[in-house]
Length: 137
Image 1 (cartoon, rainbow, N blue to C red):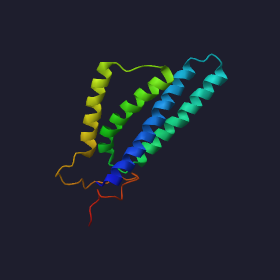
Image 2: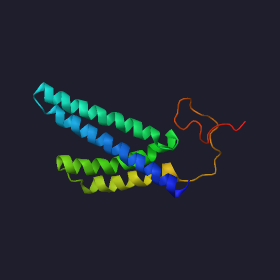
Image 3: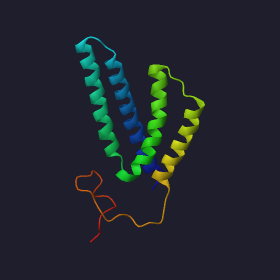
Image 4: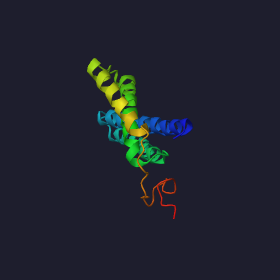
């Protein structure tokens, strides 16, 4: 995997996690509203952002089983940033230490090159089904 591909994957994951965490935060803010129309507007905005998260995560050019590791790592970092910006929540030392382990593990899952043969199975309907994991015959 080239550096450019890794950066593209990281870009998709930063976009996906930012949309997910922001959508979750907006829905949480909406839960505290008393006027139904305003609450509904918050929920609708959150739903749009959560759809964008799902779309951008699945457009990342990486196998679905490998995206999980770096996704969780990216999610942790973005979650802490949004939590601070929206809710003024400062991460504690245990959160930072645990988060460092999450990030390290996520990067290992996604980018640790190994000698195993690639899968010969392509998932029908996957946006990347025509890349690499198909039988050349």
